[in-house]
Image (cartoon, rainbow, N blue to C red):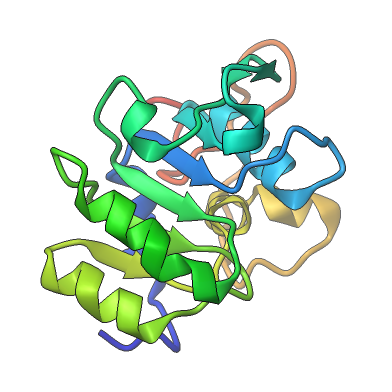
Amino acid sequence: MNHDRYDDAFIRSVLEGVSTIAIVGASANAARPSYFVMKYLAERGYRVFPVNPGQAGKEVAGLTFYGTLKDIPEPIDMVDVFRAPEHVPAVLDEVLALVPLPKVIWMQLGVRNDEAATRAEAAGMQVVMNRCPKIEYGRLSGEIGWTGVNSRTISARRPKLLGGGVQRLSISRGPQGQK
C-alpha cells in the first residue's frame, strides 16, 4: 500500500471498522496531544485504553491506564502509536503477540516506519502512518470545520443535533451511533 496518501474512503473505513483503541504513549498531562486525542476518541464512542507504564493503574478523564498492551483485558481493534519512529518496531512486536491480532496499527503525526508497516501488513493488519485519528475523524465528520479549518469535505447537509450537551457528528454523517 502507498503510505504517502490515503483515500478518505480508506480512513473512514478504518475509523468505522474499529470500536476499541489502545493508545501507546498516552499521557496523563492535559496539555499533551496524546491526552486530548484519547479524550476526544472516548467522547466519540470508542473504548479507549491508554498505555503508559509510568501511569499504569491510574485513572485520568475516566480512562484507566495500562502498563502494556497485553495488560488490556479485552481485544483491541486498533493500536494508535504516540512514540518516536525508532520505537515502533518494539511496539509492533508487542502488537503481534496479541491474540486476537488488532485490525489496525495507526502511527501518529510525524511517526513513520516503513519496515514496521511492511511487517504489520504481512501479518494482515491495516496500517496508517503520519496521521492523527482525532484530526481525521474531525475532518471526515465535518466537526473540524466548526473552527474554521478547511476539511476538504464539501457537503450541503446541515449537521444534525444529537441531543443535549456538546453537538458531535459521526464520520458516517448521521447521528452518533447510526451508520
